[in-house]
Image (tube, rainbow, N blue to C red):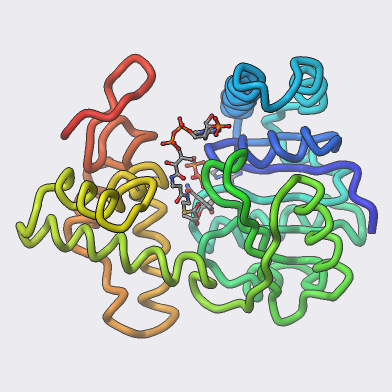
Length: 292
Ligand code: CAA
Ligand code: NAD
């Protein structure tokens, strides 16, 4: 199935990155959010990240301009009506995603693919919210999307071979390496990553070490590019908590119990980098990290 037009819904950090790589791969993109203002903010992030790639000599200024010209921001979900593939990247909440999938099912042409960038939620259940479960799939990009190579491809129980092949091909054309896995809570990426992040939060909660010490130990000791708490702030603490809750409930094992400190920080609105405060504060002119 040829994919010429891509819709991205949710213009936050992931949606902006997905629109960026989709447009660079030559696709026309509609980038939608709940308001035109939020969609415009997503487009501004794409503009900034394309400019960064031009500065580093990774792409030509012409390629950046052409990619930017292919993205149309919109505050209206109906603007996705012509898409061959929609990638959903809204908040990590099953009820909200199911409602959107049912709505998109009524808007998209027959045969169009509905992919979710969910970090953990059942693709099978998202498919069941539509009348086209064979066209529903997980297309899980990693953050920051323009940089990270992986796309985790998750088949729900009803996902067809044709849908999987089309999404694998589209991911490759965006310069990514697609890897398939089955539809289990947190898939592979977050089933392995989130327990490490949760354990790092427990280490702070129990007074074992400061956030900075935990991060430095993991960076210098394990050669991780970012310490787990810096990474949690980067992902978003609300998203980390939502993923851990899916793992805890879906796998039924208390080893996934979210640390009470993480719950409390999200309750306080300390969502990490995007909120200006998490395990660190982000208060420099470019949102640089300083200890909280
Ligand atoms: N958007 C676009 N490009 C970005 C970027 C962003 N937000 N942040 C950094 N970059 C680019 C830089 O331009 C630079 O590009 P070049 O190599 O072409 O020069 C490159 O990334 C490296 O950046 P820096 O040198 O400024 O900084 P760094 O060396 O510290 O790397 C990083 C930054 C790539 C983010 C690195 O710290 C890293 O790999 N961190 C771990 C990221 C990670 O684990 N991601 C997965 C998160 S989990 C997930 O995504 C799944 C989920 O469901 C939660
Ligand atoms: P974010 O908070 O940066 O952005 C979410 C965006 O979705 C916001 O702009 C919000 O206005 C919009 N939105 C919410 N409900 C909507 C609706 N009903 N219709 C349209 N737009 C709506 O979140 P994010 O970090 O970009 O995460 C988005 C998705 O990607 C989540 O499912 C998350 O689990 C997944 N994900 C996140 C990461 C990460 O590192 N942050 C990595 C991989 C996957």
